Structures are given as C-alpha cells and as structure tokens.
Length: 369
Image 1 (cartoon, rainbow, N blue to C red):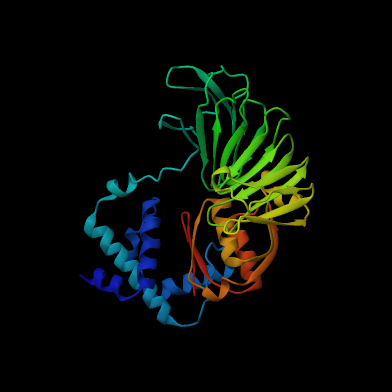
Image 2 (image 1 turned 90 degrees about the horizontal axis):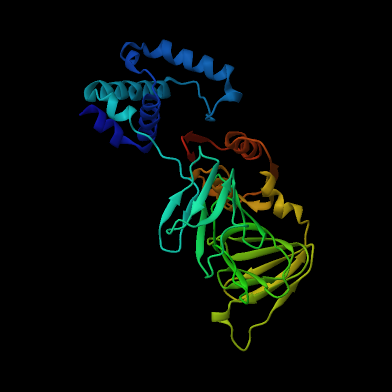
C-alpha cells in the first residue's frame, strides 16, 4: 500500500501524518485534500506562515524550495487516502483522553479520584466516618472525628497541578506538581507527627513542643517543632533540598539508616541544605528563600540551570512530556523567571537565545535536532 511505504520511508513522514490524524480527530475536515493543486496550495501556506510567524505554535525554518511542498502535499494526500479508506469517524471521534487528577489512597488500598468539577465534598472512611473535607484545591483534616488510631492517607498530585492539605494539628502543607504526601488522618497523643514526602512541598507547622513534626523523604528526616520550610525531594534529583524560611529545623538520617558515623545538621533561617542521598550528609548556604517558594504563586524560577534539568521542571509545571532530540541543547545554561506564560511562550524565550525547532501535539512536545 502506498501509505505504508511512505510512512516507513522516514520518521519525518510519520510525524507529519500524526499531525494530520490529530487534526482530523479534533473534528477537522480533510475531505477537500483530494482536490488540492500542489503549487498553489504551497504558495498559500508560505503566505499565511510569513504573516503569522510570531503566533505560530510550531517554529519552522522556511526554505524557498518545492521539495518540501511536495513532501507536505504527499503527506496530506496520504492522510486523505487513509481517512477515505477506513471511513470510520465514529471510532476516532469517540476517543477521549482522560485528564490525570488528584488521587487519594486510603490505608486499606482503596483509591478515590477527586472530581475536577466537584469543589466541595466530604471525605469518609470505609466505615462511613467523616475524616476530612475538600474545599476547592484544599483538603482539610482539622475538626474531623478522632479515629483513635494511626491511619494513613496518601495524596498524589499530577504534573500541571498544585494542591494543599490542612492536617489534623492545623499544620498546612502545600504540594507542588508531581508530588505525593503520606500523612495520618489524625495524629496520636504521645507519638511524633510524621509525614512522608515524595516531590516538593512547603510546610507551615503548628507548634507543639511535646510532639515533634518529622518530614521523611528518602533517607532524610527533617525534624521541627514549629516553623516554615520548603522540601524538594523529587526521586530523580541527586539532592534533597530543604529551605528554611523561619524557625529552626534539624536534618537527620532516617532511623533505619543511622549508624555510629551519622550526624545531624541544624539549619538556620534564610539558608538551604543540600542533602546528598548517597553520602547522607548536607551542605548549607545562604539563599533568597523567595526563589525556592515562588512556585506556590505559580511562578517558575530558573537560576543558572541546565536545559536538561529545566525540561523536568517544565514537564511538572505544565503537565507536558518533552522529548529532546537536540543533544547540544541539554547542557546550555539559562536564567529566567516565568509567571503567566504559556508553554509555547516559554519555549520561544529559549528559542530567542539559542535557535532550535520544536512542535507540539496535545501534551507532547518534541524538540528537533
């Protein structure tokens, strides 16, 4: 079949075809492709592109040659042939991608997904007891019925979202995108207040001298009495970074990994501790804490960061997946701050400094060689 031969000829052909198929799935009418006149159509493409180059979702380098026009029009005709041959719009139209949402896992393994439409709801355990309440993008476990035992919930926040929790002691935890927190439904008198973090969160801990608050991430414990601090503990990162805004915290090796050589680190306000997961030790330096907490206002702050590390932040912040085929770009260092910009605007900022091509298909971004 001509279509199969053309698709197998190159990866570029496959990408072009996928873009056509995506357009059709979104309701685009491609039936008119069969009557296209190649040269006239290409002239219109050039004219439209040059007039709207700055607003284009995909940055292209246009060259004055009909070689690419021929390839494009062959692809369009192949797409039409496929559409006409299969003639099954219902199957494509009914395809729906389900958004990844906020998920709570109860102690018994039961999972519930918080509705994106329902902003107010009660959280009940398996016995029907009220354990918390949802109010918008916040879960509140204060003022709930005391269960009398240590029962844990786990809240998972997907990329592109943020969420926060008010714990039973009124401590406030703000979770960044791509993070999860395991926490007791209620803290037990005589026991330390311990939660388990994977990802990034900002903590405002209620003071309780008799019950220290402990945040466990990997092989590190952050122990506090009452304070405000940020912990960045994404699993793919080499270090666990703790920034202290006010109060005092102490960094320790977790109980099951302590030995005779283990030591504690006392962190001072306005400082960051870089905890090395391998050596189980920390280095401290003074920092501007706002750079590390601005994510709570939706900001994305990059300071002297390599592009391959920036991609991870972009994926979490915007809920996208990025494939980079431009290896020379990976180690380029950038400094920037973004607030309300779209992902296209962010990428175009980098393009302005170091020229590269990319295209976007739904939540998939491909950076070309």
